[in-house]
Amino acid sequence: MVKKLTLLLLIVSTQIYAKETYNFTLAVLWRQDTFKLADGSSFNTFTLNDGYFYDDRGNSGDTSCRGVRETGPNGNLVNLNVICQITSLSGDQFWARYLRKNTDLDGGAGKIKIISATGSFIFLKDATCTYAISFTKKSGMQKAKCELIE
Image (cartoon, rainbow, N blue to C red; front, side):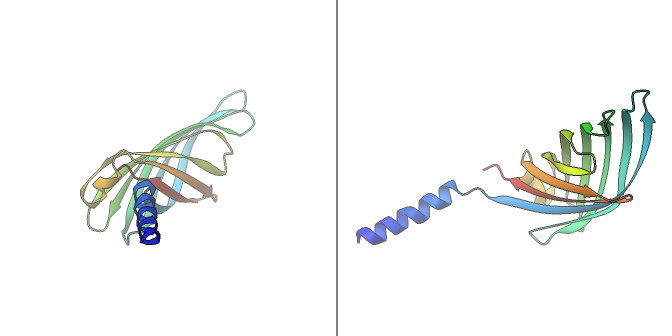
């Protein structure tokens, strides 16, 4: 009886402290406009279009992003501010704000804040995610893991 009660308490406590997660992947084509400054630093505005996403719940669809990137004279990323609109095939959407500072320009990790959501994505509102991204000359691939708010 004690063993059964201990096992039950272990299962219940694991469920109480386990955090639910949401994972999604984006792939996008990108283009940018750049201002080069005299010291070698730059400001880039960029558009990420013609992208797609899929998640760990069977959803997929389109994505579009806009942002500004500041690089230092050594080519390092100083600041990044991006917003992406993710739209599922059913028309449900969420908007993700990406922030990253002082990392490698060609890729890296950062944080995402889900700032708005509709339909089946409403559970994501206000979630914070960690992401990793890598780029080629024309495209980018990103994976994200979100810890959901209870």
